[in-house]
Image 1: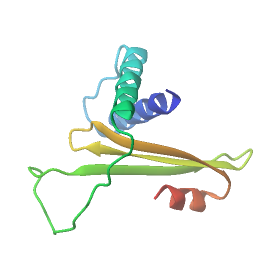
Image 2 (image 1 turned 180 degrees about the vertical axis):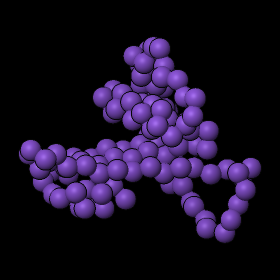
Image 3 (image 1 turned 180 degrees about the horizontal axis):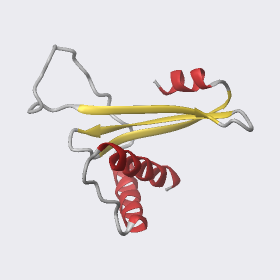
Length: 116
């Protein structure tokens, strides 16, 4: 549940910064819990995540289907511990898949590279 909560907080923060008129949710804990329940149901329905084939065919309009892939890596200043994570979203912003990984001790460039 921690990963879902962090993802939601990160998404709301980015929406607040980059989307004009975005309003923070009034019931964030309920939204996180609902998302967690949805995530666990989806995990039970599929034993493995099916690979997505991406074809680069040049420019395409917004009318076509596409996904957004967002990744990040981070390192703590005090302990040097690192981690990375990412998510795949539909064009409507719905969660499709995600990951997080503890990297141990590394520098910020290695953390970012591991995320990619």
